[in-house]
Length: 469
Length: 60
Image (cartoon, rainbow over all chains, first blue to last red; front, side, top):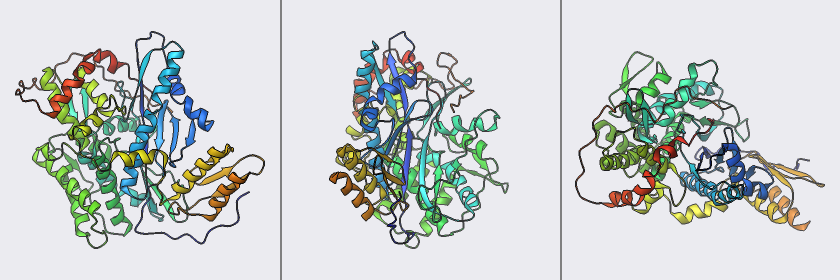
C-alpha cells in the first residue's frame, strides 16, 4: 500500500535546479583469443558482482545513482539528482570509477572461461565502426503549456555549444581526415533522414519528469558529447542552465532560429576554423562564434538581476568567453587545459609531430581511445590531470565520497539511505526514481514526488521498520 | 534498438591526408612529452588491431 501520510503541498523553488547526467560507456575487450566473444557476454561478466549485490543488472546504488546495462550492451550510469553543478560533477566522475571498479572482476571471470584479455571502458560517444551512443543531460524545468516552443528556443544554442563543450574527434572521410569539434554531431543526426532508423532529436521531448508532473518537466538534452575534463562538464551544463534560467524567467530569446538544424550542427562540427556560417530562418548567416557570443552577452545582461553573480557563475562565464575567443582567434592555448576538444587536439598534435604520421594513423585513434579510457592506469585524462595539464574543479576526496554517498540536499539522499539500510538488513526491495518499496510479506511503498526534498518522515519510518524486523 | 551507422569509415584505407605531416618538433621535453614518452610504447603495440576490435552496437 502507498503510505497515506503525504507531506505538505509541494512548492516550486525558482532558485534551484535538479541536474542529472546519463552516460553510456563504450565496452571493449582487448584479447588475442580467437573465439568470438560478444559485447553482451563481456557485459554479463562485467556486471556479475552488480547482480550478486542487487539481484539485477539494473540497480540503484547507495549514492542514489542508477547503474545498468543499456541497449547495445553499454554499461550505463545515470547520476542521482544533484542540485549543484559541483555535486553533479562529483557524481559523474564517481560513475567513471564505479564502472571501472567492475573491470577486475569481469576480467577474472573471463579468464575462468579461458579468455585472457583486458576490458576497457570508454566515456566517449563512438566506436571504431561509427556506431554512436549517448550522453544525456537532464535539467528539471517548471512545467509550461508551450514546452515544445520553449524547447525549440534552446536549439540554436545547443547546435553551436559544441565549439566550447564538444569532446573533439578525428573525423575520417574518403577525402582524408580532419579534427572536428564533436563526435556526436555527425554520427547521430545522419540517421534522421532515413526511414529505417529511429529519429533522434537533439532534445527528447518524452514527458517523463520523475517528479510531480503538475509542476515539472524534464529538459532531456541528448545532443551533447560525453565530456572528460571537469571544467568542460561545468561549462556544458552550466551554460545551458544559465540560458534555461533566462528562458524560464520569460526573457525573450534572440531570434536565432536555424533554417536547417541538422545541416548546421554538422557544418559547425567540421569547421575548426570557426568561419563556417549557419543559415538562420530569417535568411541571415552567422558563425557559431557569433551565435554563442549572443547567448553569452544575454546572460551577462542579466548578471546581478535574474542571475546571481556567484563565483561559480563567474567561472562559467569566464571559461565560456575564453572558449569563444579561442575559436574566433584560432589561438587555443587559453583553453587547452580546460576544454576537452582543445586538450585532445593539443596532445594529438604533439603525438603526431613525434610520429610524423597522417591524421588518420591508427596510433592517433588509439590515443583518442586512451583519452576516454576510465581506467586509473590506462586513462590518459587522469594522467594529464596528475601532471597538472588539465585543470580540476573538484578534488579526488569528493569523488571518492560520491561513489558511496548521495547528495544530502535532494531526494537522492532518501534513496541512498534506503538502499543502504535495506541492503544491510538483507531485505527485498525495489527502487526507482520516485518510489522506495519494501517487498515481501509486509510490502510498503513510499512515493517521492519532490526531487528537492531531502528529508521525509515516511522514509525515516520505512528505514526504522527495516531495522526492527 | 541498435542503430547501425551507414557510414562506416575504415582504418585501413590509405588515402592521403590533406595536410602534410608537420615539421619535426624542437628537442624540448616538457610534461606533455614526458607523458607521451611513458605511454608511447603501449599505444604503438598493435594499435590498428586494437582500435578495429572496438566495435559495439549503437546505443541511445
